[in-house]
Length: 173
Image (cartoon, rainbow, N blue to C red):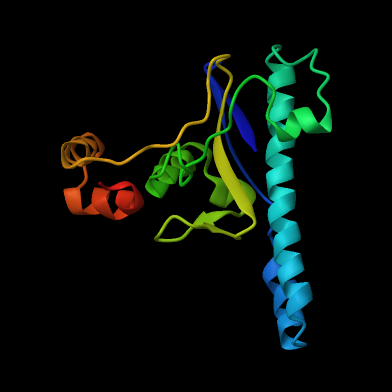
C-alpha cells in the first residue's frame, strides 16, 4: 500500500509474511530447519523487492522516473532519484516513529500488519518507510547523540528522556 503525500514522499507498508508462521511451524515440526530458515529469508527478500518495485512505480507515476532505463547494477547501486528511508535504520534510528505511519495508513486493518510493543512489524516479512523524491536526497546515518540533543528530541516528541534514550540507545554518546 502506498499513498501520495504532497508531492514529497510516499509512505508505504507491505508484507509477504501473511500466513507464513504456519508454513514455518510445519517445517520446524518436521525438524527441517533449512526449509524454515529459507522460507523466512525468501519472504523477507520478497517484501524488500516489492518495496523496490513500489519505489519504481512512484518514480514513474510522479513523472521524474518515467524515462528511466536502469540496469540491474544501477538498481542495486541505487542510481535513481530519491530514497526510501525507514524507521529503525541508520537515517531514522527511532523505531517508535512507525506509530505515525500506522496512524496515517492503518496497515493493521488494510494489510494485516501490526506493530508489537517494541515496534517490530508482524508478520516479520513486512517493510515500511517513506519514499522521498527530492533530487538531492541521500542516505545518511545519524551519528552519536549528545545529552542536549536527547533532551531536545524527548521534549519535541513529548516523551520522557528515559523513553527517548530507550529508542535511541545505539546512538547515544
